[in-house]
Length: 231
Image (cartoon, rainbow, N blue to C red; front, side, top):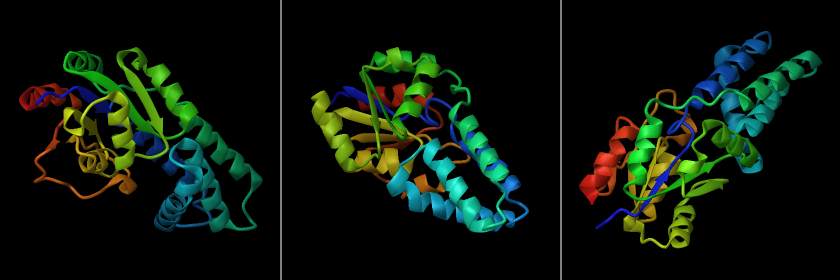
């Protein structure tokens, strides 16, 4: 068997992401502290964000709208207009934060490119994901870029067909059990789970520890060695 296609997630696999969402959430909690306790506000924001995913999709813009909606729900009529402006400013900061690559990503991608075709598979707002990819300087290292609204088994099946590989000739690596690992396994591929501190609870899922095509890695730098073992 030979791995021909190497699919990689972007956010919190190639560069830091959730730390910026966490900082923005903390800013919101401070802004609405006069109207709601932190625990209640955090729960309401999480519920609102989950409820809005089917309308706004994933990403900073949808998160900003959910922050505004949460503030309105918690504060009611006394909500100052200036607070809405402050939330919008926090959302703009989230959209424009610098891209911080994980250590050694360039060298790791060089090694992976020697072992198969590289395709970036990420979800979220198209414009924001394109902007982050451009800022990362990594775009030219990939043979293909797939920015999707969500990652499902069918997403991966279509990708494998497009790339002309059998599912068992592909591997997906990422930090999300829900979006990267379990759907890739269901589609018949191999999957490398690289957990990150502060992961979004929505992206949690069943840990397929005993699955024959699954491996948990400490960092992306371990992926080339695993691929060598598979080959």
